[in-house]
Length: 588
Image (cartoon, rainbow, N blue to C red; front, side):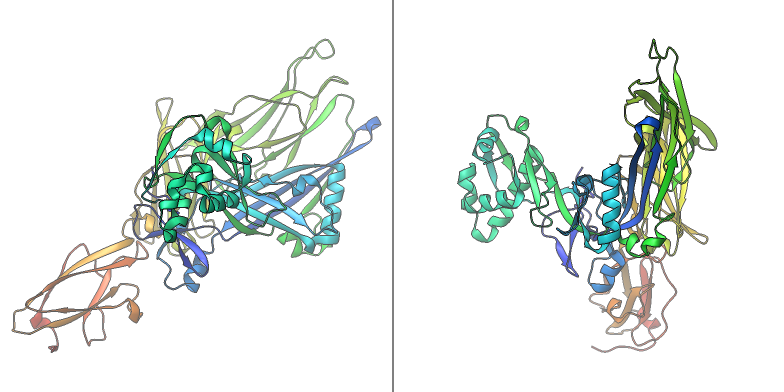
């Protein structure tokens, strides 16, 4: 439950960024994303001739983001950064656009928007803007592009701060002592530091002043997890501010006891950089048309016809998904329409928006049912998976994985590993009592993959194999969960902490020998070499190092003073030496 999660306690800082230790996995660390990089920007503007009703304008704004962790730059800027560095997974994310006072943006755009998590790094946002909002937004882009900025946040779950203190908590009394159930997290922290007794926690006063902030943070983490939720603050609060919203239903009267030293998972809200409009700044406005801003003219339809716009919002690239068909059905609406009306279309391979025309009776309110049917691969055989039947009364649909009846499991591989290997991913489980299997590959051309799995898959297990030439290594099997899978070099056998036992048999009366050791791929780095002195009194030693790659997990050795290193050797076998083999004898 706790192993593999980031530990919020005492993060280290490298190149100005916090790095969190991974709980119960020594040598492994996680870094939060530094920024949201805009991977795609698309504004589709629709103009529909509705006959006597005139022209109806609306648009679909689609933004695709990639969380940029910038781990390679972090390692370069901070040579002492821990080698076992990976990405910190987010459970939720938000974005808010803002502009200079002289520039007006539609309220739909400047509102706090939750982002769809489509993988370990991929996030997306889809907005439907009406006609006036479309005109206002397009005008703002052309006249004040440089004045538009953004704030972004990710929420991640990790191990709460801990302190050896047990507190008695009365949730209802705490709720009554709060000025409001919704307020800045920083204000509650300050009150716990300055006047903890006002909230029913006088025991915090007994904590030494030098450690009171840590004890306060331990309590605050538990208040957030047990009684409330973290949200980004409003636009008029300082950038990066978080708000804590308490849930009164979770705060009944009575006494509960909390041990602040016990492990507990809790969320943290982390502000990050974002520039959603970066793709627009790279092109002149005259070049936007057709690539970033697209206009669609929908011809006039007869009375009772409705154009339904659908937008796929699916992580990709996808493995195991062959074809998806969207079906709309309007049940009979007697007496004006005593028959069912249907429309269907396939989801485009490029996930572009598409339209379906559904015919109802004149003046009949728009109301219909819809579902998606998908053919997916089970091994080498296609099988049909039906999504749930849903109802709608709007002209715009967003098609997510749940609508397909699928779990699109996102697998991402660290770019550093992909520079020397490709990774094959295999998922197997049971569906309706029968075996189910799907495979995919991640390589240098694409560092992520979404495996198409039925939502009713049972006992799903993921295995991954890294291949470089004729060499291969495997990662430990993992159970399929709702979270994605992130793989780096340390996910595979052979990477990480390595230990070698070395021993010298003194068979010629030598007083000592000097042996130099180094990881197999870092013999040219003096700081990575290790010199060992063995004597008849202490003829054995153990040497440890960190292997940065499963394909370079061995070591090399040489007698001190020599220039040539040995071939790469595995530490699985101890290094056995004889003093008589040393070319020269070293003296103390």
